[in-house]
Length: 168
Image (cartoon, helix red, strand yellow):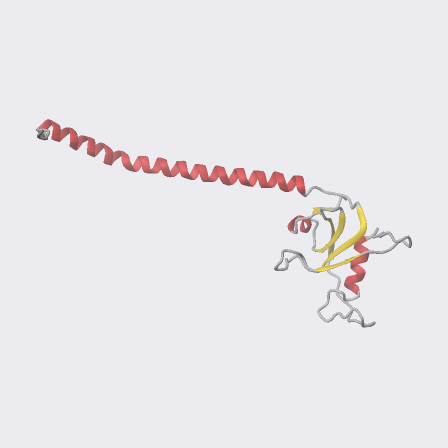
C-alpha cells in the first residue's frame, strides 16, 4: 500500500492558514482565562482556609473560667522555647488539707515576679534575690482549665499564645 499524500490546493492552504491565525489570535485570551481561573481557585482556597481557621480559633479560644485551681502557670515570656513550650514556672498553694487552692492566680504570679523568680540571676536557695520588675500581666485559661498568667498589655495576648481568655 502506497501512502496517499493529501493534495495541497490553494483552498486547503487558505483554510489551514485561517485556522492557524484564529488559534494564534485566541491563544492570549485562553491564557488569560486560564490564569484568571487559577487565581480565582487560589483566592477561594485561601478564603476558605482562613474562614475555617477563624471559626476553629473562635470555638477553641472562647472565654473560659478557671476550673482547675490546683496549679497556676506563670509565663515569663510570650516567645516559645525550641520545644514549643513557653518559659516560666508553675506554682500551687495548699489549703492545709493537701489540696491546691490557687484562687488568685494574678496575685501569685505577681508575687513571683516581685521576688525576682524570672530574673536571670535568680537562685532559689538564696534568701535575698534581686527584686524583679513586674510587667503588665493577663490571666488566661489553659486547655486543662488551669490559670496561666502571661505578660502582655491586653487580653488578646491569650489568643497569641494559644490560650483562652479569662471570662471577665
